[in-house]
Length: 185
Image (cartoon, rainbow, N blue to C red; front, top):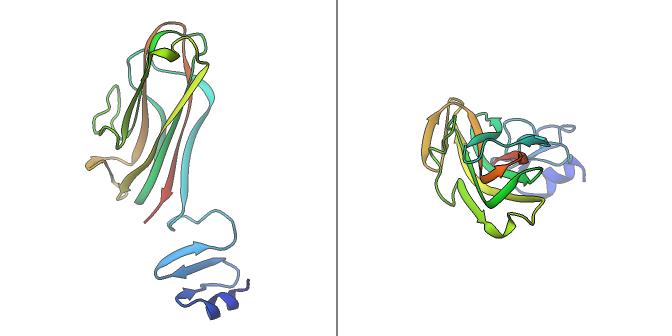
């Protein structure tokens, strides 16, 4: 479809340039090229990944599984975490996951079933090799200086996927993790 066909046949469409592939409808700018959306536009994606198996924190201690610096905007965030048994021996499994800004051994600002979840499964303790779960669709606002998540505003622009693995008695579990942010405004 040519740019002239777009601007001539669809009310509200404005085509800023013939080669940019950007189109705008009622103030929302999109992309017709199939390429990544440019910075600052709705649909822009930011992500951070730990793709190689990495040792978790000590049992019962929160750690930063992965961090993502945000730029100003409103974001829909999903955090992904996969626990890998590796050499660990568990009596039962308790995992916690939070998308927050707090540093250190803390999930301050975590709101249950909003940006914080707990998964406990005693039956998996000996039978699993890996177990994955996620925190989907967490709305985050960043003004370029502060981040607001789950109604709490904190200074800084780094979002952390905090994880806790509890009740392994020996060995060392591992994990992989990712944060994906999609600009929605």
